[in-house]
Image 1 (cartoon, rainbow, N blue to C red):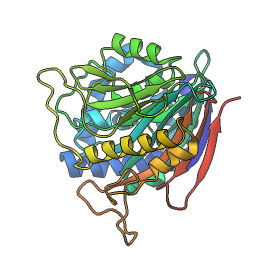
Image 2 (tube, rainbow, N blue to C red):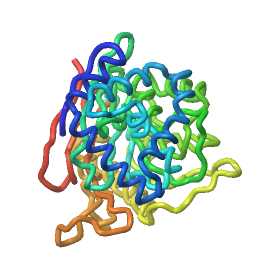
Image 3 (cartoon, rainbow, N blue to C red):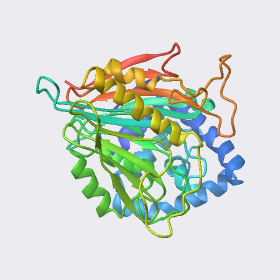
Image 4 (cartoon, one colour):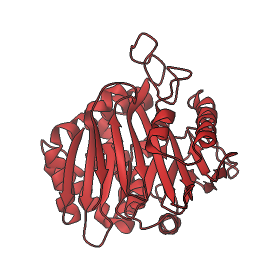
Length: 366
């Protein structure tokens, strides 16, 4: 996975991103042009026109994001425009979430057997294998904001990651009808979380901006608390942690369906049939770890995210028993796993399926 350090003004940050990941940004554009045509019957010119409908809201409420996207476009070159980059960053909203990525996440907090606080948030990010070569790890340092690390698709401002204040964020796709051009697009909401100094600070900012423009679940945690924000274009419902039967751990997990009731008019569309079984399996595995150890560890979380029960539709998603690429209508496989320790402010990244060979590295802050 390409790793890029970006620093300076919003435009400079974007320009560094675009210039150092130019081939991958163009790869993302090619991938989503094909994807939109396949799933929404939209040409790329139609996609760009639709994307620009979100621009007035973003310019008014998040002008730094517009400058960063402009920098990405200029840095990528080869005729790449601001509209292209905006389209990547609102790709969930354009298609009303109808082909969003899958994933399994969990957050786990405990006071620890010795009284030492433990706080983790982790995720397997699942999406089509064709996009695997366009993933990047961005480190972003901007004046007056927390430094952040994010694992994302080239051209997008953020996805999964954590910051120097120990705030971590994950994303789970949800299919529900509705889109608003007067709320914050999903991936810009993730970047907003990564620029926040606490869970409470992010929630306050998100509320002030009207919420999210389309369906998604944003998991956000710091060393003291965790919450999954089940968003639609009409409401936000907060899923709070539950206590495990053993030990003193609080546990929060999410997959790809709404767990809680939502406002009248929020119409969820079935997405991945394995979403509920995966959620039940995460709970089962974490209960087992709690009985045995009573507090979370990196190795324990690796066991959870490497689990292949129900393969290929497992937590560790993809590959049939002969090792072939997953063959299903969504075509998604686990493209990376990340485990974030929010107390130590460190993360462990495994590129590809957790049980297979591939790049792995650590991220952290001084």
